[in-house]
Image (tube, rainbow over all chains, first blue to last red; front, side, top):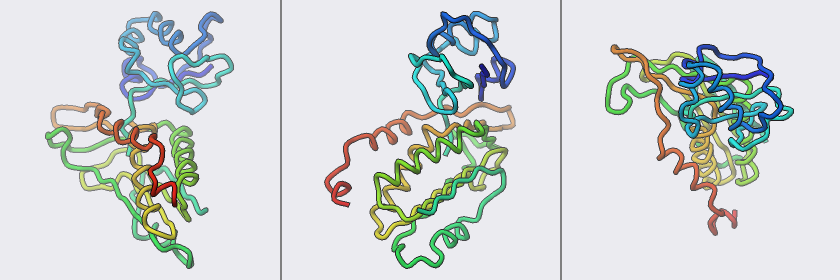
Length: 83
Length: 161
C-alpha cells in the first residue's frame, strides 16, 4: 500500500510518500502508526504524539481504530489549516 | 445544481465568479460571496508569506463531499468553491465560497457551514514565512468548535426551510 505524509509529518519522516507492506497483524490505523514509529528515529519523531496525527484511507478521513485491510492509499497529516 | 470546485495556484476574480454563477438565472434571489484573504500577521507576529500545502485528489473530494452535504441541508441553486495552494503574500485571496439560493437565509447559512468545514476538514496545511524562518500554523480549537456547531440538529427555522 502507498503511504503519504503531509506538512510536518512529511518533514519529520523525510519523504512525501512510500510503498510498504505491513505485516498482516497490523490491523488498524493506530497499529500502523505504532509499527511505523518503530522503523526509525525519524518515524518515532513524526508519530511521537499519535493523538495529534490525522489519517485518511483512500482519500477519506478515518479514525485511528479503522481497519487498514484493502486500503490502497493511507495518508498521515497534522490537523488541517485550510480555508 | 451548478457546482464548481477548483483548486489552483492562481488568484481568482470573486466578482467574475459570482456573475458567472448567477448569469441568466431568474430563480436566484440571493448570492453570498465569501473571500478568505491572507493577513499580514499570524498570532500577532508579522509574516512575509504563507504557503499552502494540500493533498491533491483528497482536497477536491473532501470539498465536494461538503458541498453535497450543504446541498442536502439547504435549498441551494449554485455553489462555487475555489481554494488556492502554493505561496501567497499578505493581501492575496486564499479561498472563495459562493452560494446561491432563492432567499438569503440558505445562502448565508451554507456559506458559513462550508467555510467552517473548509477550515477543519479540507486537507490543506499553512506554513508561515518570517525573516526568522518558516513554521507550520497550528489548527485552532475555535475552528473545531465552529464546525461542531453544525452537527447540532437543525433549529426550527432551518427545518421550516
